[in-house]
Image 1 (cartoon, helix red, strand yellow):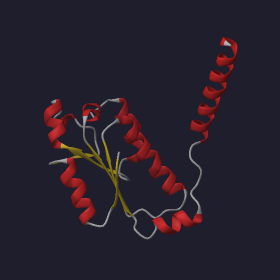
Image 2 (cartoon, rainbow, N blue to C red):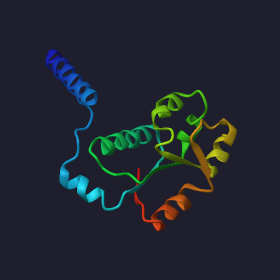
Image 3 (spheres, rainbow, N blue to C red):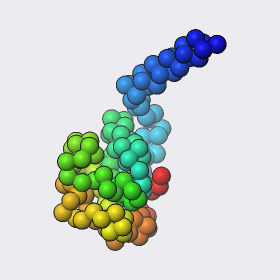
Length: 146
């Protein structure tokens, strides 16, 4: 029984590793056509997993030919303490500088003791994540929050 469980676990590990290595496929022409109708996108995130996921979604949209007029991520919560210069997220974000706007909730910064000068390049503090998301909705952005 234990041997069977190990074999299944190894299979799942290899399967998941292969899925991550190949990434998400290009989107269908129908999806691309729909998304081109409203080319402004905003995402609210509160953890590293979703922040990286949304950045990877940007790549998928671009690789699929979706026209992106604006792409913004609004960050709140404990992940804000990881948005400092020299962090792993600073390195991960490097390829998105100048392409993706990232707004950071000032309330979360205050609560977590993160100052504006500690944030890595390309991040912009906003009064609150909720107000920023409402503002983006009012300006015609497609919005999702995780």
